[in-house]
Length: 326
Figure (cartoon, rainbow, N blue to C red):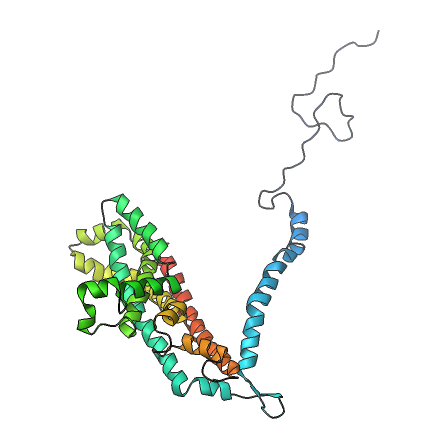
């Protein structure tokens, strides 16, 4: 009689021997999970990268049409002179040199001077208001100031000019009420332009500098106080040096805003104040001389160069400020 001794059952969870027949009902081996760093789709990711670049084509097309084409036309016109006899165009620097001499140089200087004065005043006044809001124990005050600043920063142009004329003009309400005309004050002057520009630049500076003031950590002031430093010493050695990049960046932004403003000055003072933006508009419209469009393009090129210099200064300041206060 053959041996009926039962063979021992294999241990649970043991791997089957090589070449063995899989038992019915046994679980199939689970393949290894894909690496999380690859996202499980490494081959598809490489293929996806090749097909993602067409997505940004509309964006670059928009830049080329809305910015590249006007910029190229401006540069071409600034360095092109039309021959009055033959009507042919030729390359020349006459327009650029003319835009930097005579009355046009005076207009460029006047715009730079107006921008510097308003940028300095807006930076100082806006920073003081923002600091008062940050240190205020009333949260409602911050909400009111921020909301009002956001609205007033966008109230400029012709509506602002008409509002100032109705208020501080020759027959304005405040002028007649306080007899400002007897003091020699005139809204249609450099001082009047400064007041009008500060109306929307100070709120803009408040909105700009508030995040930087919020970034000043209270632990810094506590650490300075624990070392025996006064409040003035804290601001002189810690607060102001940390805020300097943000303040300078805000001042540069204010300068660019004032330098590019046109409608407010055009409605308020017209051509009585030498400003480059008004001179460009007059040259394009032929209000002074006919056929000076290319000279206007040369003046516009001067403004673009100054704006690029402003951006070249502002971007590093923003990065440094973000590194300190981030």
